[in-house]
Amino acid sequence: MTDPERSRPDAGQVHDEASLDRFLSELEDVLHDLSVRTGLCWWEKYTGGPGEELDDLYRERSEIMRDPRYVDLAERWKGRVRDPVLARKVEILSLEMLGARVNSAPEVYLLHNRILDRVISFRPVIFGRETSNSERGRILRQEADRALRREAWVSTAPLSMEVSTWTAELIGRRNELAREAGYKDYVHLALALASLARDEVVSIIDELETLSAGPYRSFLEKAAQDQGLGEIEPWDVSYLVEKVTAVPTDLFPRDRIVPSLEEFLKSFGREPGDLGIRIVNQDIPFAGLCMGIDPPSDVRILANPHDGHNYYQTLYHEYGHGLHAVFAGDNPQLFQEEPGVFAEGMAEVWAWFTSYPEWLRRMGLDEEMSRTVAKNQGVRMMARHRALAAEVLWEFRAYQNPRQNLTDLATAMESQYLLSTARPVHRWAASAFPAGYPVYKQNYILADLIAAATHRALRENFGEKVVGNPKVFDALRDTYWRPGAARPWRERLKEFTGRDIEARALAY
Ligand SMILES: [Zn+2]
Image 1: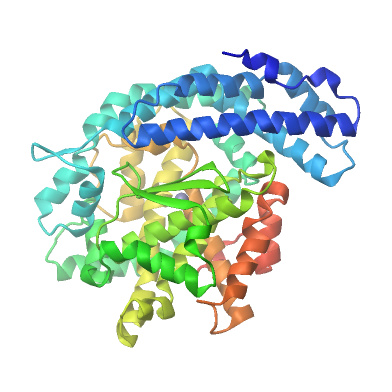
Image 2 (image 1 turned 135 degrees about the vertical axis):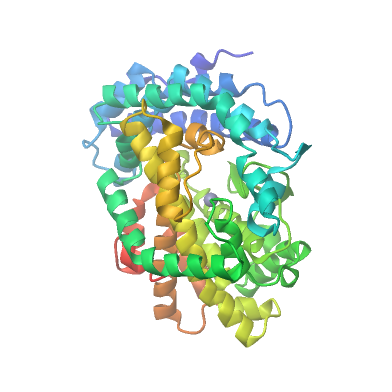
């Protein structure tokens, strides 16, 4: 065993830009090594292994990112470096250190890891039978038996009740530490790290809500009537959306997902085997998960696909993360990680290709069916954004006042946005998000705005020839993926689309 302290660079040696450059490169080596080991450890956990060193790895990161000598150094040099690359590195380092004041505090990461451990190993029990997360998802979307859907919907309550005290404590601690760092609460801090403001996100969500309220209500009421349902229950919503908008699942068999992705890449002139992205099947508490273990050579995707168009969208989404990670992976360590909002945007840009009529025709759908699928995406997205809005605003308000009854808050948000009957069931803590990925869900809404604006720009620039045009791949790579965080994400979005992020990018 070597003493990790000894291999860390000495902040005392930095007295000019040249020595700062050397210091940062050495620090990046340390952070890179730690990031690879942490990635492998999470991988082990998600694939059923022990992943025992996780707390130690988080402690190591905490010791580096909260080291007062390093924090001082970043503060001292911030805004004072002439070299633009070096200046950007200092800017990112100090943002990461700000995040670490909360996320790398031992009382936070120990709770975070402990809760996530429970969430990952939890299997829902439905009518007395232990089932998988993906089967639970399938029931909620596709099962005609309403009682079974209700059982699936309430099946996460035991997990929620088990971890809710820890999760509430975690929310409180994150808030305290964020306030110590000068922020109103943790939501404000977390969004600032991604160059976003709380008011901005709330007003985008409000705008989308107004835009979708009328059409969503008429869609839901008609669908419920057609299915002979009286009151709309929360366990009916996904089912109704799926029932009305889904194409027959046999047109999208699970065993063609990966081949279709490979063919699609080849149509852009890329060899999938050259990219270093590996896909592994595993039941996880997400639709899919992409892990950039050691980009560009080692990027892995966990997924649990079934038959159906939405599983194609999921895997393409994860592959979008993969492409982003692979090309950003040529950068120095500090430029490799990007804020969640842009990362999800990159994933959705790729997923959106599965709604192109050209792509659907390649899957063997006729002209009319291709147009129907493309048209139905609007309804699906409306429903998805409203469900996400309920979760996002629940979380924002939970941080605003963690002492309120969080189940009542979740119930109120859900019935308001889904337009379903209020059913106060304890479910809010039963997901990886509140503990493991706090202030993250808004990224999925914003990602669609990024994707919409990007695809509009692609159509403007390349006309009918978007799918299978190597120049499209190159444009995405050069402006979006390859620069990584070396250039701020909003700047790259403006360059690509001509606009900043905005609700009106979407028309549903
Ligand atoms: Zn994603």
